[in-house]
Length: 224
Image (cartoon, rainbow, N blue to C red):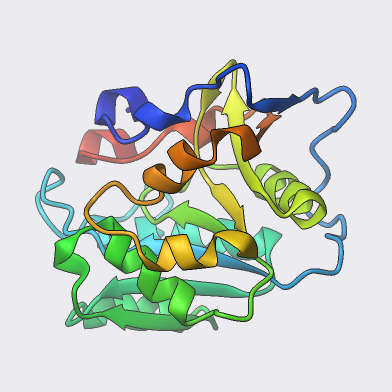
C-alpha cells in the first residue's frame, strides 16, 4: 500500500523549490560505500499500535519467517552503524527482539499520543547526532543502498533528504541536526511532516529505483 493510500505523506510531493538530485550525477552507492564522517543515527519508529493490522503488526512474520520489525531493523543496520529503535512502553516482546539485534531500544511512555512523540523520544536518546535517518518499522522492503544514498546526502548537506521513486517521495527521511529542536517539539500523529512543510526549500530529493520506499504493511496481505 502506497503512502498516498495511507494518507501519511501528503507532504511528500516535490515542489519547484525542492532540489532533485539526478541519479546519473548522484548514483545510489553500494551499501558498503563509506559515508562522510558525520555521526548519523538511524531511527526505527516501532511504537505504533498496528490497529489496522489487528495488533502486534511488527511481530507478524514475513514469508521467510522474520518478524516485520526485525526485517526493517536489519535493513537499516546494513546502511548505518548506529541505530535507535523506539517502541511502546510495555511492548516487551518486540523490545527484546530488537534489542537482541544489538541496538539501543528506548521505550516511549507516551507513544499513544502519536508518532511525533515516538520520534522525539528517539531524538532525545541521540542528542549528539549530526543527522538522523528516520525509518518506519513496517517498511521492510526498502533497499539498504537507498538508505545509504539518503545518509550520504544528508552528511554532505545537513538539510532534509527524501528518496523518490518515479516522482513519488517515500521513506526513510533524513534530517540534519539543525532541525533538532523542531523534531523534539513535534506533537500529534503526523511525524515530521510539519518540519518538512516549514522548510520545503531545504528539501533535497534523491531519485532511486526502489519501489520499497513506498511499500508499507497495513494488513497481513501486504506482507505477502
